[in-house]
Amino acid sequence: MAVSKYLHKLMLVFLLIIVACERPFVPPTATPVPTPSPTPIPTAEENLPEITAVTLERIELPRYESLEMTIELEAEYNNPYDVREVTLDGTFIAPNGGQMLIPGFWDGEEAWRVRFTPSEEGEWGYSLTITDANGTSQPNEGRFNVTHSELHGWLLPGSSVNPDYNSPAIGMWQTVSEINGTNVYDQADFWHNRVNAYFIANDPYRHPTTASQSGDVDWEEGHLNMDAPQVHLYDFDDPVGAAELLAEWTTRMWQRAEKPNWVGEFGVPGNERYPELFHNSIWAALSAGAAMTPAEWNSGGSWGRMTPEMLGSMARLGQFVSDLPLAALNPSPLQISSSDPEVRGWGVAGESGGLFWLQDFALDGQPIAEVRANQTDRQGVSVQIDGLADGRFTITPYDTWQGTFLEAFEVTCTAGSACTIPLPQFQADMAFKIERS
Image 1 (cartoon, one colour):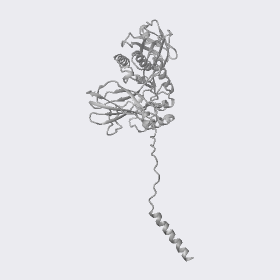
Image 2 (tube, helix red, strand yellow; image 1 turned 180 degrees about the horizontal axis):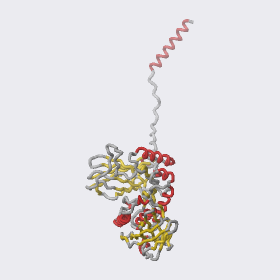
Image 3 (cartoon, rainbow, N blue to C red; image 1 turned 90 degrees about the vertical axis):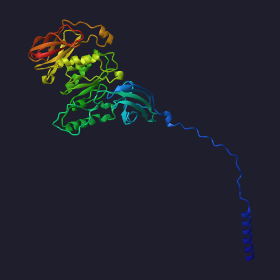
Image 4 (cartoon, one colour; image 1 turned 120 degrees about the vertical axis):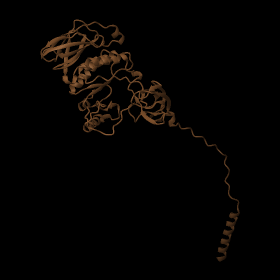
């Protein structure tokens, strides 16, 4: 048994030696097979938004004047006002190398725009990008030149607040403009009420507050909370009918709350319907009781700028009201009816006097060429005015297109009864001062 066991061990050792002396095992060589290249996966860059064109309103402008840029672009979004979907950003590089970041905006009608006011003379550069859910576009770059001007620049914050000083630099606080164009959504009233209350509580001068929504919106809760209700009006293009629109909105805001109100923005693109649209708007707002002249949007580009004719309309209105103590009149609206069914009017007056304005609206809704070619002389017209106080008044007609006062005349009115006022011959429209005799 012991020998057998010994031989078994010996044989096992011999086998191990033989295995150890064999050549290493080499697996069979396989024929190489080329590894297929992966199909390229499209990158997000292929879907990036793109700025396709940039148009500068002008390539040279005076320092502290506004430059408007119109941008054509391709991007994916549903709501151009939602910064979570799309943003247009501009970087402006000053001659000294400093940079200013300016956001762009959708103008609500036809284009993306960027507005910028340069603060230095010399050559400026700009770089514009558009960002959507796919990423940010390649920058669109360019340059423009800024020349010298006598403009003083932006208002700067003071180093201290003195409540005894009534700052002439601020008429009132606009706490927000067109809040429904922001991402506040259904919190608009809540947000506005809190911000409005903050300004009222913390302004040592207690300047009045105002705010707005865009798109001809009747913002009832906002108007009840702010000091000076405001509306923006763009949904019209009739130069004659503009008068009724401005007067109706002014009357609506006044009836809702006995506060000073105004049209914070209005207008139509281009200058084709001007100055008639502008002229009729400012006179209608005044006669309906607006606290200030409507602010026509004319920042350049497709909206144009104030023309000499429009400035003339402003000057003539200013001359008419220059010696009217409007605030002291404590006026109420007048109700006016005309013997001519194609003449309408609005007016306001208090105990000591007031004003009214009449308009021939026979060409309401007609093209501007027809309006200009078919003016009619209105003669033998009289109006019945309800709301004038008891007593004798001097009525002074005013030619709103020539800026001249006509011969005054007197009327006697009885409180509680309509006061009949004969009118001189006129075309298009005419304004009248009412002064207690």
